Length: 435
View (cartoon, rainbow, N blue to C red):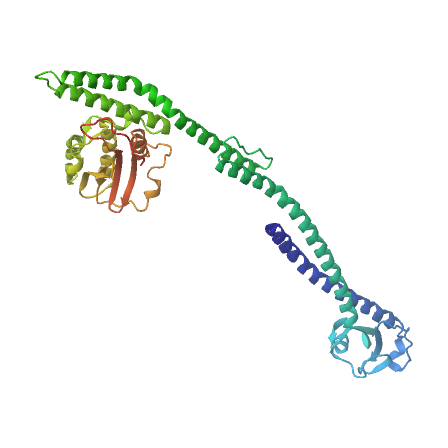
């Protein structure tokens, strides 16, 4: 309502002010024309012998003051000031003149005979009369503007209800969902924007319902999938318990088998959780290449090209991630893209550094270049041009397909960081953290 009323008020203001000025100018112009017509009628009563003293009889006019002045600017007939003013003197030059003197609107018309000005007719009226007409017109305009504003209020209230009612319904539906009623759905609406909100809310509730349903079925799925390995583990432990009473019993093989089955149980649980939560699959996040090996292979490939440019390639790996493994093929491609980018667009020494960050493996590729001016568009996919605009978007896609992420950590000096889910060297089934 505030928006609608403000718009209407501004429109009325922009319309009424110029119209009010136009009304003022029009009424005063009409009054001047009326005075000029009265002066012309009086001039017709002046004969050619006026200069020699012929008397003049003017028709009575109560609405205005009309007077006839001779060439010496003396009042000869009618009404008017004894001493002519500046308007009469301008008319004596042979042109119609008008102006405002005090509280009077004055028009003067020259009287000519034989192409000579022999006198001037002066007509005047109080400006208060014209101002009264102007004020009446302005009051009418104000009344019309008020009526338009009132109509706008009614229309705005109706439109506000038209807009607020579906939004209130959406709010009630959202509250029902928040209270646990996942069957509540927003109704479609003819207003496109509100209908989009309702559709998005329904889609969100559908996804939430599906997620909760998957969570509810997790127990049944887990019990079904874990029944066989649990039974095998239990039977193996029972058998080991019976054999432990025999002399010379070696518990090592039994314990190793129990550990293997426990690992299988753990992998099964994690697989189920990842499927339920739509996380990257285990196979995509765990590879078979240790980090030092992956970096050493990249160094072997790029030492020569960078050395040919007079640039060093330095590789370091923090001890805490030296035994970690990464998806070899994906990392192979990603490092080639990053090193190629450093070779083409970077400067100075190039460094590859493997480090740990919580449960995440981070591989930094850094050079001494500066990408501050183009950092926002590095990963944007654009139509390829002669082999360009492909590498970094492809590297990011490979990283995401492996359950990781590629980002520009620092534009100056340039440092790209490849974040991968951590994978312990002895437990190849570690899950992917949310990055």
